[in-house]
Image 1 (cartoon, helix red, strand yellow):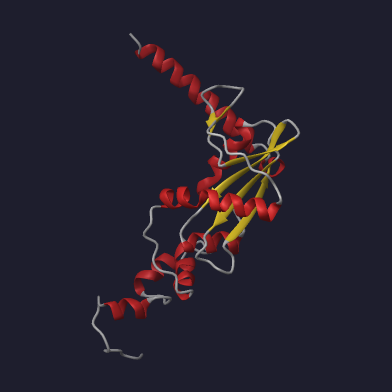
Image 2 (cartoon, rainbow, N blue to C red; image 1 turned 45 degrees about the vertical axis):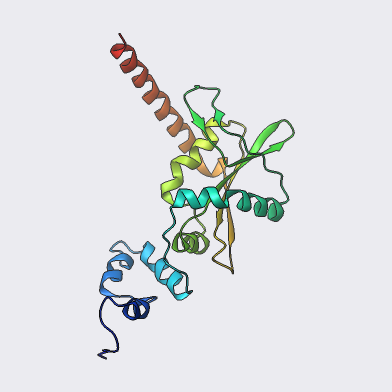
Length: 204
C-alpha cells in the first residue's frame, strides 16, 4: 500500500486526486450483487473524461437543450419534426401525452421523438448499453397508447459535453413493445374508472 500525504482530506487537491478512481464510497455505487453495471461505473468514466460534476437541474437542462437536440436529430435522420403542446387519446380524453416531437407520414403521425439531456454519466450509460433506461418505460409506452398510428419512437440522448458522441438515438418500435402497450392501456382505463367513481362519490 502506498501512503500519500501531499494534501489534506477534504481539500480541493484531495477531491481532484479521487476523480476517476474507485474509493470506498464509490465502491458502493459501482458494486452490484446482481451483476451488471450501476451508475457509479459510468460516473467514474465521466470523471476520467474530465467532465465536471453535474449540478444543473435535469429538467432545466432538457428545456435549454431540447430545440438544439431536435435540430441535430433532423439533420442526422433527414426528418422534419413538429412540436405540438399535447396529444389526447381517442380512447379516453384523460389519457394524454406531451411529446417532444412528432413526425408525419402522409396524414398520420407515425413517428415521434423524445429528447433526454441527462448527466454525463447517464448519457455515457445510454451510449454504451444502447437501451432506454427502465425509468422511462411508462413514458415510452404512453406514446404508443395515445397515438394508435405510432410505429416508431426515437429516444434522443443529447449531451454536448460528450464531444465524441454528443447525440445518440435509440429507436423503439410498437412491435418491440408487444403486449406491454395493451397492459398499460388497460391499467390506465381501470384506474380512471376507479377515479371517476371516487370523484362522483365525493362530489356534493
